[in-house]
Amino acid sequence: MTKAPMKKAAAQTLPDDSFTITDNATGKSWQLPARTGVMGNRLMDIRRLYGDTGILTYDPGFTSTASCQSDITFIDGEKGVLLHRGYSIEQLALHSDFMETCYLLLYGELPTPEQKVSFDADIKNHTLLHDQFISFYKGFMRNAHPMAIMVGVVGALSAFYHDSIDITDLEQRQLAAHRLIAKMPTIGAYAYKYSLGMTFPLPRNELSYSENLLQMMFSNPAENYQINPVLSKAIDRILILHADHEQNASTSTVRLAGSSGANPYACIASGIASLWGPAHGGANEAVLNMLSEIGTVAQVGKYIHKAKDKSDPFRLMGFGHRVYKNYDPRAAVMRNTCHEVLEVLGIEDPKLKLALELEKIALEDPYFVEKKLYPNVDFYSGIILKAMGFPTSMFTVMFAIGRTVGWVSHWKEMLKDEHQKIGRPRQLYLGQKQRDYMPIERRGHTEKKVSWSWLWGKK
Ligand code: SDX
Image (cartoon, rainbow, N blue to C red; front, side, top):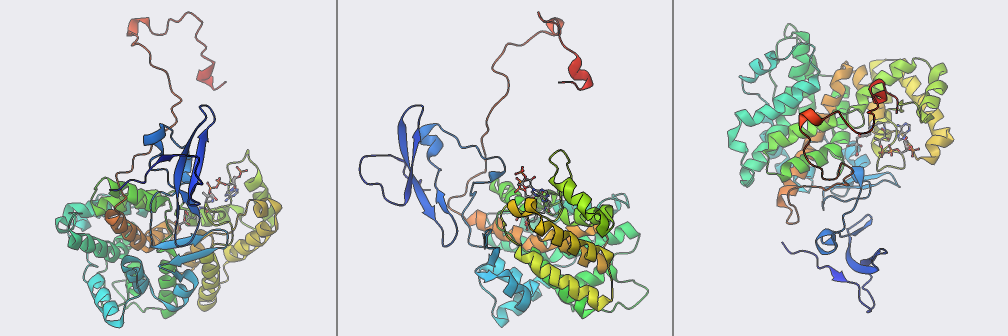
């Protein structure tokens, strides 16, 4: 792999595509190459920094760090722009469907009619789960959180599908990617059915991806299940809105796991685990819980105050974003879909009214305006899913079903990237300096009196 040359700064006029850093402690300077993508920020290429200078960078949470190069998704946080392979999320949500969006993310172009038919058929070919998995589900308590089941079941796929775990084999990579996209609705729906003590409905491949998901979730074996086209269209749009989002926490987790050569099922299981957190994909569940806690519009002011109070751990769930410092374009589409679904279902959900009032007050509050905190993708999704009958615990499962195509697309891209190597960050060490081993008989007898105040929590 060719490494970017690291040249010490010289007297000549520096090319405009570089940066110079100076260590003021030593007066030494170095020139660092700049890299500029097709769109977005200029980057300082620091790959040679440590090797040539012994200097590390410090960036907890990677707020100023690009971990890789990618051509899948572009986000302009300031403008609230989200593009998948160059197509805006608004246009995809309006004109595309989830299977077509999956093809676009995986292969870089919208499919031709023939490619779409073939891709659709291939995904449908993998919707079933190995029958042995049914006993795997039975190992869980009935009240297990469906995300706990999903993490376990997806990780266990590598114990069943040995024909798609060799990451050096391009065909096996594609098989694993298609299998994961195809099986996630089955895995998620079965976790829900298991919680109800109901039998597991088989996928019906004459249905679309979203229709199949709905029938596996809500069909009753004693009755004929009628697909509601408005709901299946809404589900399809929700899956599109969740499909990918650049280097978010769960996608970065998948990339890091994949960088060690772990098999695709293990990598996606790690992404599911990361998504579960309330600061990430678990926020949709947390929004509904927060709206329940707020209860009425009269309480909104109190909770806005709590969200602004640094001494209060309460945060406005579904608000704020690491990258968006403008309205999350997905939240706008989600809000419109929310109105559509509730209108069709004839539901007057007080939580929607509460959410709209909360959004209005927050967007007019100087704290949220100054910190550029806007609703994100999770703010409205839960209200729609709740209206459709999904329990709150299934909201993040739905997010994972949508995001699987993004995870596998980045996993495949990472494996092809000539710059990629195993992810291994460094640290700022603040621990003990080297010291000699203390025999146990001498421990606890120190010259100065040991203070036990730490025991009851005083500093
Ligand atoms: C997703 O990365 C992605 O792309 C994720 C995602 C995807 O599609 O993959 O978009 C999906 O995860 C959306 C985010 C869902 N999470 C939530 O809605 C949880 C609530 N939001 C926050 O926890 C927070 O906004 C984060 C985690 C989303 C972003 O946090 P950052 O970027 O680390 O920002 P920060 O914590 O440094 O906050 C900056 C300031 C802080 O105040 P100061 O210390 O500067 O005074 O804004 C404040 C924060 O206290 N702040 C909030 C807030 N979010 C940030 N204050 C109140 N309520 C909030 N929600």
